Image (cartoon, rainbow, N blue to C red):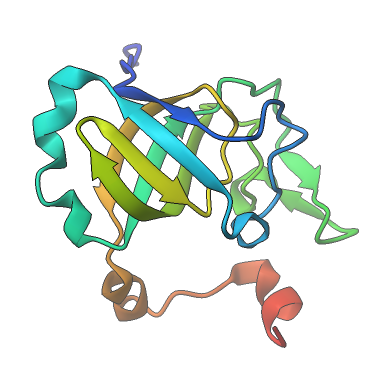
Amino acid sequence: MKSIQYRPIGIIHSPFKTREEVSVQPRLSRRVKGTIELQPNYKDGLSYLQKFFHIILVYHFHLSKDFILTVKTFHSDSSHGLFTTRLPDRPNPIGLSVVHLESIEKNTLYVSNIDIADGTPLLDIKPFISTLARQYGTTLGWLTDIYSDK
């Protein structure tokens, strides 16, 4: 298989300076504010993005370490497959987060509910469309028991 390369389109800034400071779950980052500095040549791609309340950030886990395929999380004493978790140590360290879009000024996006380390390279931005999740009847997988009464 050919090598795949991506070029960052911007940098994500947050109050989390180390990977240990980053919230282990997005719900623990409510109200945490951050900014995204998009490279100026991508500014036109932001047209109409302010119409969305939430956006999906696709990024490179630049602080990622070696991965293992069976892991224990803080949620459970049992081991789970890496691909059933949101842990950053992965074969391809690509992250995905949904954040609240507060505002846009030129090529800077102001967001909240950020759960990403400062200095993280941004690969892409997509609008979050909640009706798509409902349309497919999503589930929480092995996390159902943990979140079912919350």
